[in-house]
Image (cartoon, rainbow, N blue to C red; front, side, top):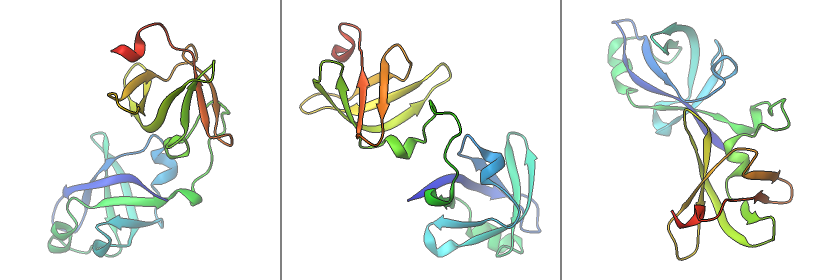
Length: 169
């Protein structure tokens, strides 16, 4: 599965350098000289990184396939992607990659089905599980130990212990 790790915002200067927005929580392992990125749209890539430096919370990057300002303008807005199979799994057993959890069933401790996890929203205080429910609006469940008591990726489920009324919001 291809995962977006960055997005080319715009050219920087006249020699093909590009401003890249970081879209990963592990930029040090996702961005490196020599790394080859698949792209979306596919016609703009693949792109091979030849230079990376930090700049105002983003990266300034150069790519082997982008040698001038004209080509840099052509790749504006391109998403940089890596294959999830090539990424290392988290070291912490309580840490998960978002795409490993997508599609898992969300159930209560009593076995009642809440729905299916469709995405994770990353907030400043905590992450939230966005759960698709049949015949109801999506549920937003804080991804904290007090409410998410078990994550069983091989078993295909997430067990939650929710306070009264949370699903009625």
